[in-house]
Length: 141
Image 1 (cartoon, rainbow, N blue to C red):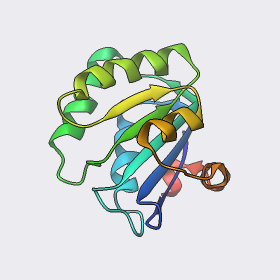
Image 2 (cartoon, rainbow, N blue to C red):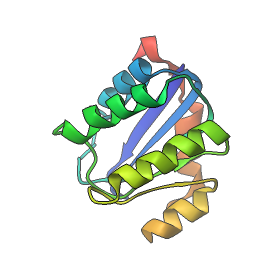
Image 3 (spheres, rainbow, N blue to C red):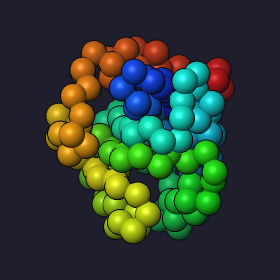
């Protein structure tokens, strides 16, 4: 799995990008590392680009990951969306959307514009291109 993330304090957002085989363990390590990004604040909103990722976890593993997220003090507390165009990642995103409905605002969408419009933020697409270009193997974090 390759991953990149960057906090953009001027927009109060964190952008994550994943590619390759995405296991529960790898995703958890990457998420925790993203919380240590320079300038990151848990109040930020953000997005995860999963369009180049292949989800490699069971529903049970996904639910365990959600439990880890919900109970962690560094978790993002702002609005969040997943950018997905694959059936499994979209399905898991919809499960997460339902699980977070009483916790924090979250959606899964297939377009950049729809996600940021939902948040009522005007975020330049160039920021995602910057993060995508920085993807590297998880072991290099």
